[in-house]
Length: 286
Ligand code: NAP
Image (cartoon, rainbow, N blue to C red; front, side):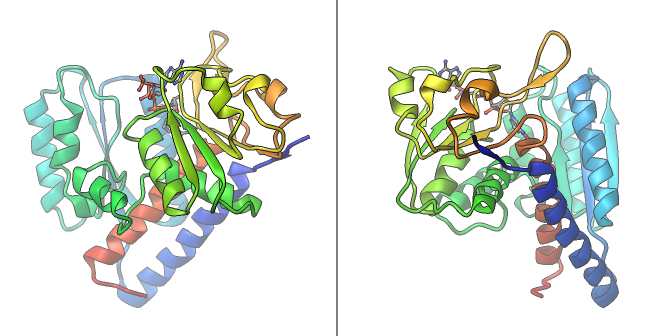
């Protein structure tokens, strides 16, 4: 039986640390971090994410500004808002909730965000910094996964790590962070041949596929650490990961549940990045 990795508790610890540091920042320097959250359109999932991010800001003592734009917003209009927020000294972090409606090129928007305020760490400059291992911000979901793995006490160095998924926001940076910690990393994707033979080798398996119950028991090595990034909505409205929990849990040594695993960590790491951004912008090193 696997031990559950409690993302709720671990994320609460991260947020508490951010809250304490934020209080100190206010007391010592009179500075309160501020996050601008931009949402375009009426996607219900995006609305939930944005509300959760605003709630987390409140919890840790940040200001948050929401910009809710209509579905038919043009790329130029969104770019104009991003430029305004880049210039606004009262804003330390900018987050544009993805996906944006199809008339808007999300790459252009990400590139328009000032790298110092790019608390999602999606801008090419920040991605490049991650590649060379000299970064200010880490992308929130992979950084959260690293915290979860570290909470188990399992050493990453020298371990076989398999990441299923190669997206720019999860799979690729995830692999890079595991590599920085000296894991031997394999990235799998939809063209991978005989995926189970590769995943069965993994000491640490990270699933970021976006398909409910995709990772089955026969794909997992006995004693593996299994991290489920997937967030899939079933027809009955229930949230479900990429890992078939019932089959995999008896084989794994540690496993994350969905919900209550990676999801809460992503928001906690966003808070951490916003605090880091605020300190960097104000040249505060303590
Ligand atoms: P994505 O951009 O759709 O990427 C999915 C990846 O899975 C792609 O690289 C794809 O390969 C690969 N894939 C698809 N079918 C496969 C197959 N049959 N075998 C092997 N690989 C396959 O998704 P994403 O943005 O990375 O997100 C992945 C999941 O994580 C989603 O469920 C998402 O909701 C969730 N997520 C959760 C959080 C959180 O906070 N918990 C944050 C972000 C994302 P190709 O590249 O070849 O197409």
